[in-house]
Image (tube, rainbow, N blue to C red; front, top):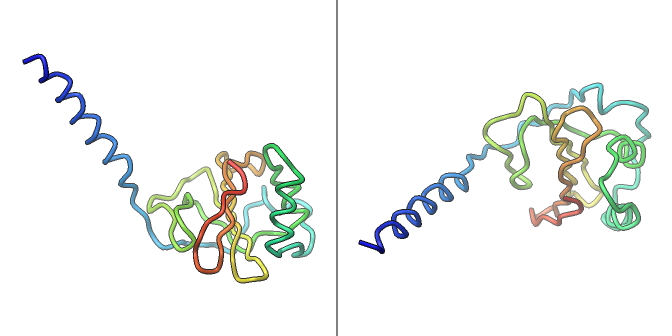
Length: 140
């Protein structure tokens, strides 16, 4: 009977972990309607090569400033309330207060930026996706 408690606890933890990992996903629902928090003084679309994106994040350590990103790369092509899961899918349930911004790169890849607060100031995650879908973490 001494083995029962640890075994029961292990089974419980495994079931909770499996449930948390089973996040439902859905095809991206991008909106071209960019909220005002992301339209303040954008530059023209620029610096959208893989090399320029990688260089920007190497030169700018620390939490990226969303307004500086928009000034440097230009406005995003789309905005979604979905949290990023892959190049082709976001979370099935959309957030009412946070956004993923989509920047299309010159090679057909994309850069996705998660603004966890939805106010245009707080970058939570930035991933660059190759055209084929492979993701590269730029900032977390």
